[in-house]
Image 1 (cartoon, rainbow, N blue to C red):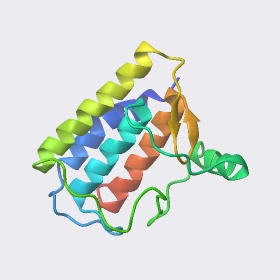
Image 2: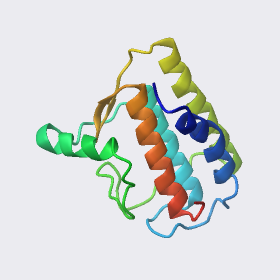
Image 3: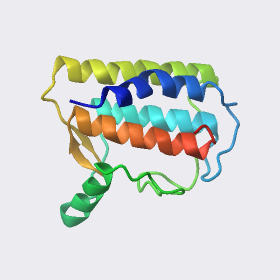
Image 4: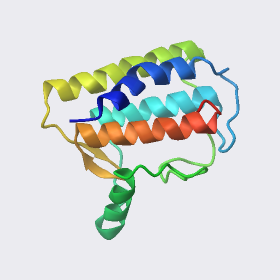
Length: 154
């Protein structure tokens, strides 16, 4: 079973921390402002819940190395390049930061509910392969910590 502390962090601590940011705030690295980062994270959660399907990037030995990293406690490095992202940040989809954070909360709760209703579910992640609930929680937690560090919230 997924670490309950990580689930609580995603559902409670992460949104509270993100609300401290100004939408236009820039991180210590990368091209996204704070609201773009939140909207990017929403897409990650939608992928984890199975709502958003993305193309496979890693297979075979490369996939195995990425999975070893995922299930370690090693953090993502600064400026980790996501092969699915362009060098230009996303256009903003929500009218303000609070709306984006509320949408993130909704998607996080939906993610937990989907796996509660089907504990045997796996969803496909482009970079890390098929993940069950525990694997998705591990990835979302690691990803959240990465972005909190990016915006000096940890």
